[in-house]
Length: 128
Image 1 (cartoon, rainbow, N blue to C red):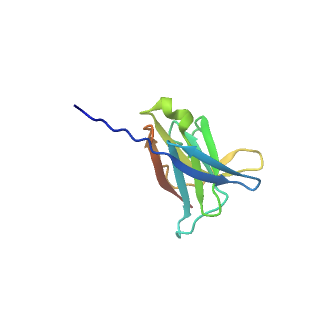
Image 2 (image 1 turned 120 degrees about the vertical axis):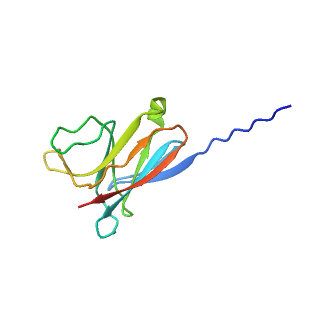
């Protein structure tokens, strides 16, 4: 006789903006903390998710998701929609949004995750 056990982990995170708070309940997600070089958390930074690394001298890759950091410097991404892309690498970068709806890169690094269903990813972006 052989016994096999399976366990599905589920995480719950909340996101907030100036107008609303959204609860995300998924087994695949990413939490990005945005910090200033001095170590302080940064509120109101736009974090964008891409399927290619951002290069400063080229147009932005296609934006897959967007989140704005909360008062604790956290940006949450529900990645359940992308679970069918298991094995694909996704990149995150910090920006300010300009008045013409364009973006200016302010992050010094770009965390990347190779997606695996059921994982909760966590990383930091340091801004200039």
